[in-house]
Length: 381
Image (tube, rainbow, N blue to C red; front, side, top):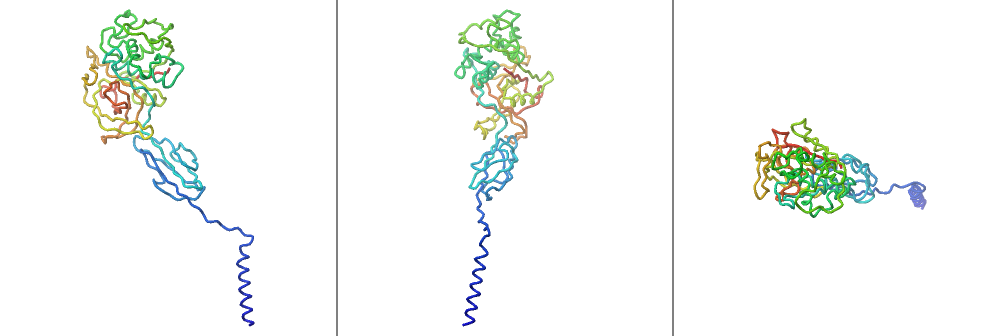
């Protein structure tokens, strides 16, 4: 009996010791972990790797986004949680108390959105009107897309349905195809010698530099008459002084860095080439904008084009070689190898032919005579 009482007493003491150990002391709750799913658009890789990973709530995770050749990192997005910096390729992410997905976004090069893509022929039907048409895309961009005060109504609100009408008038001021034949000789452009295109030096000088087209109002210094024949533009076109920037291959050129700087400043520009003979390579989609970029390679020099493209002669009747083909440059891609032929820098342009895609990428080749690039022309309204 005595032994039984001792056993019961020992068991009772043990129970009290066990129960007493939890009285007045905190207990550690179980750790709840959550799933972080790493994702990415096309154009790069991420660390941690794509897929599911498990982390504690409030745990800080180091993130790294690495763009592929030709691409750039844009930003991070997440369904929950927070970033140290959503725009830094290397940053931190704090895990929330729930499952979450983090996505790295990449873009192909740098592009200016919503630049018009007007094509020849203009309303007059003149097929070789590439330079005025390329400039009209820029006028429409500043007036109708950006709504810049100094560009107000410079297109007479003909965007987007009839920029070709504006091209007729811009072509007159550029003296394209000797359009100023009826103008007094001392007020004509360099085309007074009867050339059949547009000299590169006329693109800005007779559009902006002499305050000709964009200052087409009572303050126009030349009091330029309206171009005959053709319908008058709607009333209300407002004139402003703009600033133009030229870059010529034979006059201490800047070349590709000039184009890059203008695009970085969100200023589309006219780029002229001594010839325009391209071979299609591939279509690539920009993961950021969804735009299809049609990649082309340069073919051998060809100074004339034939149907179905407009019939154009890019050397001029005297073989002067400074007329060329003009396009509107809207972007660039650095260190890109889309066709597997070697890494290069590329420009992305709106061609002025209706038979070509909207966004054409062509590789940059050093200035003439080695390459087809002739000149670049940018404006600051």
